[in-house]
Length: 77
Image (cartoon, rainbow, N blue to C red; front, side, top):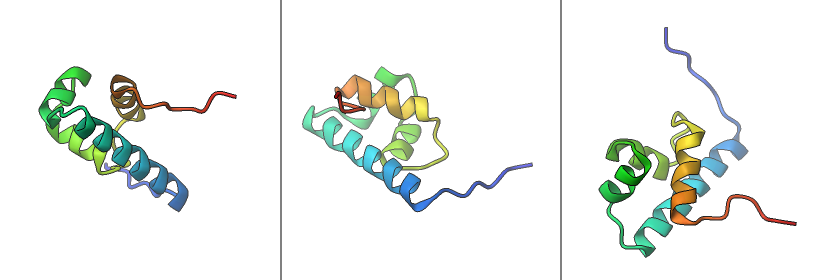
């Protein structure tokens, strides 16, 4: 049985923002979707979901993409 989850507006916005930051950083490095997907160890389709802010993708995969691209995840104090 498939479970349908609902997410708050803020959570959806955060997922979309991270996805756009990943996409922008990838394009700035002139990497193809396939190149980044291979570096993460995922399919190109999964990367496309990450960049689209799809909430069903494992958070660890999105975070790994951000780390590989050098995107700061948390502001240091």
